[in-house]
Length: 449
Image 1 (cartoon, rainbow, N blue to C red):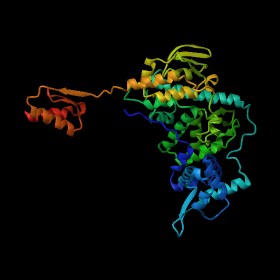
Image 2 (image 1 turned 135 degrees about the vertical axis):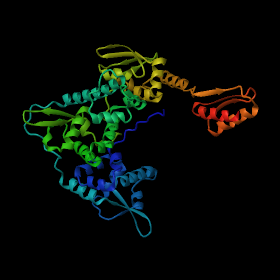
Image 3 (image 1 turned 120 degrees about the vertical axis):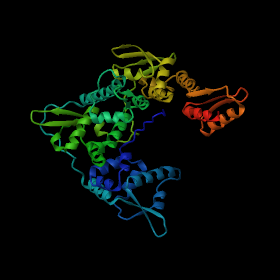
Image 4 (image 1 turned 45 degrees about the vertical axis):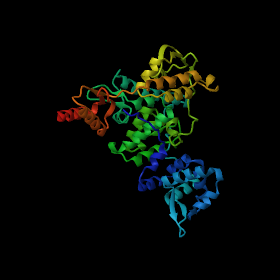
């Protein structure tokens, strides 16, 4: 089975994939225009702001003059991004030289928004019961996210039935979980790799898949992207009335609550949702590392592993590639062994992913030193992976005792034609072929008698 690669694409990749008509519809919302402006590469932002109040096309050569000679690559990346998002419309003049003009809908709404300011997508609720503090909300979001990942792990281990909604289960079944007939769901190679990603990349993967299969739930992807981008302009910790949402948006909010992006609360007469930082950071680029959590793992030169954490999720993730020996209230102790790594490699996790995880989650005391993970440990992890991959097993069949050399040579030629010849011994007239052509080979040899 080929290794499943999981790539977490941010919102702007999803926006760029929309048809032109839906993109223009999105740009009718000023908040979405601002969210997209925030996400652009620095040079692309400069171009948009600099020509925002200029109505005519701007020559491509003029734009090139705005950058230094060593920034040509960044310039091309910026231009390509603006064209993909239909913020720049490419036009050609009489000399067949490229010029660029801002999308009229995007330009008009962003101008108005920056000049006059904008009204928030939704008003906060004035009189509500005591709201959770920002610290309590951060703790809630973290607990919900960890619970969500633990459900994925427990589904893969078949310890208990999953309580995920049907829409979330479909996301998992697209690449993280596999299920045959009545067997319990099992983690795929992609699922194991997903668990070693940082939280930001995991979130973007889930959001991407959630948008991708939205049409199966009867939701337009453009409407869903619009709502999610609007959500990023809500205020963290403030309450918003659920009655202001459409039915599709209400269903989306319930799914987002499972991920910890919002907290749902119920009053006597009304219900409301409270956005967490996960929701209000949705329009931030993946390259932003300001939200990364503090590390907790220390690896020693003797392959001992200490994780200063009380999280069950951290323990289960470390168990993917190490042997957990015991767990104290605030400390997980384990060891990276050959056997534990072989199990990880067989599940599709690579040595680079394990090393990257250990480096990204290094405890602050060791994160400052270079390398944060001892070199003898990283080298040995790679060596054990190389050792495991040294031999490749191919199902095959062995043939000997051919009645004549002509039959033997004809059989070899037949196997070559089918791209199934693995080995031959001309002296002793023996041959090994791939198992997939075994039946064809048998029929061929019967015809030679």
